[in-house]
Image (cartoon, rainbow, N blue to C red; front, side, top):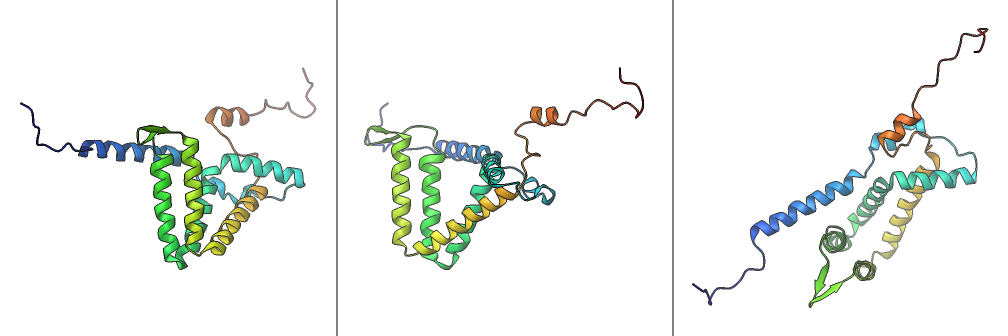
Length: 191
């Protein structure tokens, strides 16, 4: 029997639940690259760099290692700076949601009017839209100062945190901590 008078639904509740569970999984995977805050703020791992080149090397290594943590720090600083500009804060939250759904959490190509849109186009459109909407909220100086503060915090942390105790995987950690062979007793003949 054919149902000519029925209106097709665009998505079923199970499809929406699947999307939400996939989104939660992708957020968990993204946050899995976050390093433990205890390691990031281990005060025994801070020292002055030996020179400018050492500071640059530390910044490169630490940014590569703590990139998710640093992104969270910058976003928290930006969020806190927008507390006194509620319209900007609302725009910021809406833009974060748009970025999540249109760029970060999407596992299928974006199709608009039957045409597939590339990730590069989505990235450029979202970046332009983000800048334009935040500029229109009137909190430009506030946003720029917050971003500057976030970048200064990140660079300062990255320059002063030593990198000799950072490990990317368990194999590298065990390879670096293999105990040296025991030294013979002083005065004992070397074989």
